[in-house]
Length: 486
Image (cartoon, rainbow, N blue to C red; front, side, top):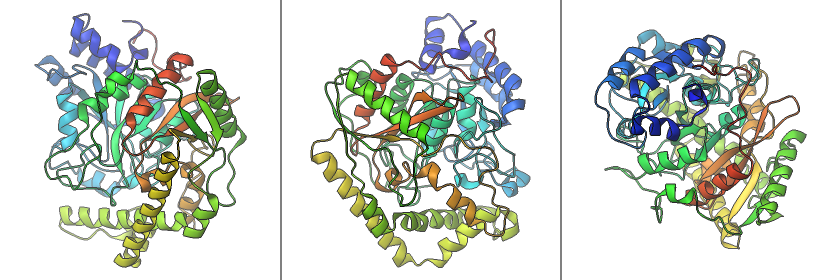
């Protein structure tokens, strides 16, 4: 199977289904690739090789991805007994383990995936890079001196380099889309509460975060969303159900869509890197050649973002989330977590979360709900999709977001350009995807973001599949990639 490392999860599952390969063969090959590549990339921090081989050698659930090797991110969804350190040195030292199967963890297992390990993540998923002190930096397969993005950077590096075809990821401000952009992958952020976060969590930070994966292909994302999406008992609210399975969108005619685009971020004083602008312009041309109507228009007015101070209102929710996370882990550990036990930025954000009142939190959530209505009205005016750069910068050098200086929050402020186009859609809940359609002159991936109305992942999968057919990216592999005979 000389091309196994290049195959997406759908193709690998077909090998098992047809009898051309066994699950154990796929798992052994993925483990070999991981052992060969991980010393250079530091993407996988927990090896679960023995458990994976045992699972693959026995009867697996007959799901759509039966026998496909898989990686969990070390944050969010998990299976009972797996390490769960969320980038924290404290939890690493205590060898903390997940106390339960999460609902999504169960659904990944029922889909037939075989988990071979868990991937690196920044502490509590805070930054758009993957450089935790607990485990050190993950490195980008396209340039190991640059960021993988975050917080799902370990997963993105593993998929991009060919260790596995698909890996778990989650997104609270761009943490699926940013690593997908940095590593040349397709990254779909679903609609808020499309996927259950139970049983221990209702919605994270009032619905700011969502879960899914980073993938090599659009069809993997569609099939996965069919397999793991939908509500679970006790969910506080649910996303509207799709009209038909997402897999049916893959070959559907996208028709002629009306697409608005914007090149500059809705952050006063911030400008997009010229490479990011070029990525959007090239995509506009591609979309027009496919018969779509594209015009410069955006539902987000920079003057409105400045008047509402969306940057600071997002900080209210983000900081509250870090305070809540430390409090929740304190309960699980039976003692208070202290400042010296976490990274400086984590503690600084948690302190902001504790200082700002509950009334202010609800007020800032209400502001985001107002913005969500304005965005919905833009779609109702006749637009089907919004096109933006995924990030306003190309992948930055490792160390850019170092928080060891006198003001740890300066690292958070330096991260604003990475999330300037993504975080707003966590606050408002729309589905969005980063599509790998452009590479810089130096060979770095530059993603573009497509955003759909609330509940309309079907549009993203349909247009994503059309773009993938028109400008395939599967054959583009990074300098650090699995050898052809693995």
